[in-house]
Amino acid sequence: MPILTIRHVTSYHYRRAVAFGEHRMMLRPRDDDDQKVLESALDISPEPSELSWTQDVFGNHVATARFAGWARELSFASTICVEHAAAGFRAADIAEHARTYPFVYANDGLDLARYVAAAPPHPELTRWTAGFLRADGSADTYALFVGMTQTIRGSFKHRARHQKGVQDPLQTLALGSGSCRDLAVLMIASLRSLGIAARFVSGYLKVADPDDDRITGGNTHAWAQAYVPGAGWVDFDPSTGMVGNENLVRVAVVDQPCEAIPLSGTWIGSAADHLAMRVAVKVGAA
Image (cartoon, rainbow, N blue to C red):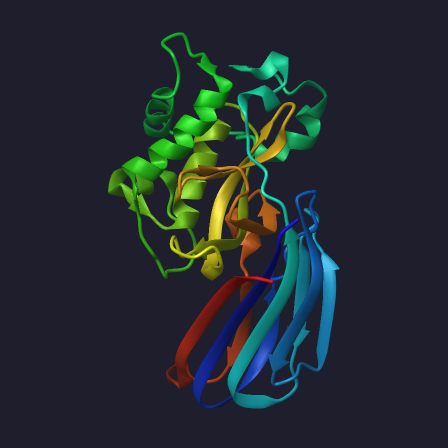
């Protein structure tokens, strides 16, 4: 499998020395069938008084740092070497009984319950989703997934949005635009309204120069996964219109976006002390 290196640096800058509370990090990619972490290093400055690693209920790697001193700058530098195999999605991958929507999850239903909508969706979302179905409410399952992914890519403007949190899917529909996480949440809400299990994914997008086979850049990214009988969890990226995991390195899979924040924490000082936060991501071929 191809090997990628990922360098992710986040730094916080302050006018004067401040104290730091607990910081939670989700920076280490998952070990899945199509990707495996070979090496992992996390450099934090100033050095934390305590650093612990755990896995959450979804199997994501979570690091927690605690600090004892004061400083004017706090930086986190994650360096990862990951083996990554591109996996596509074909109509033939779908189990025979699920090639036409609606379908039943059968024995997988209980495990997938948290990823399916429990409450009735908003009428506006229902109307938008109905556009991917035939008049009788059925659809070719493969065409449904691919069509929704590529329609969002073609119909909505993808824009950077630095505010915290995600837009409500209705707001994304009204604006016709959103960040990668907003577009992912729209697709997830739409699939869940159809009774299809879907979850939120955060990680890295590798970006290649079209005139060069080497990987030249990258950034943090968010997309959706849906559980397809026969194929299992499949990646769908409505921001790029891509189906399958090509160019995508998973860090966290969750049922709600708030559970997949790459880095969060607190600091103690005056609000005026905060100067800037800087983030740099580089994805390269090993």
